[in-house]
Length: 171
Picture 1: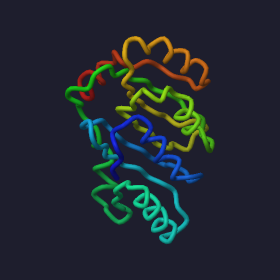
Picture 2: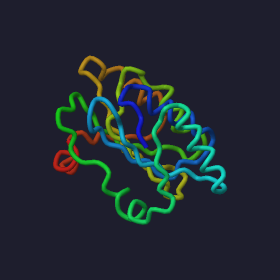
Picture 3: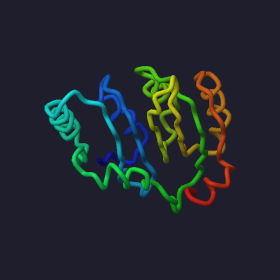
């Protein structure tokens, strides 16, 4: 699916999903206009899938349904990402999000709306917390408010900005 590459677009997308369980979400900044995301959403049946796609498209979010696309499900979802040339002021954090409805929206609604999410990877592991990797564009003057936000959020987190795997494969 595609969403505008602007602060708040991810939050809008997640709000359109409602109370549905997100099982996987992969995204990496590619350019300043449009973001391509790979998302897994738990649905009851095909009619709910059809209804969800219609809702997203009604809100001008181009959507492709990969339910029956084995290559996408087995391989492409693990390959989303890569380097983001020209991306400035990115900071990378690893989180443990509580596995409860609303945890992601709490994060998105609490963060400064001028920070842009430039990388997001979440996968449900069946534990009491979800492992999440998030890149955010935060100008130098915003680093102190960012730390205050993270500390007040109450989710465990680690700054991974100097991680050699990040430097080699994602920055």
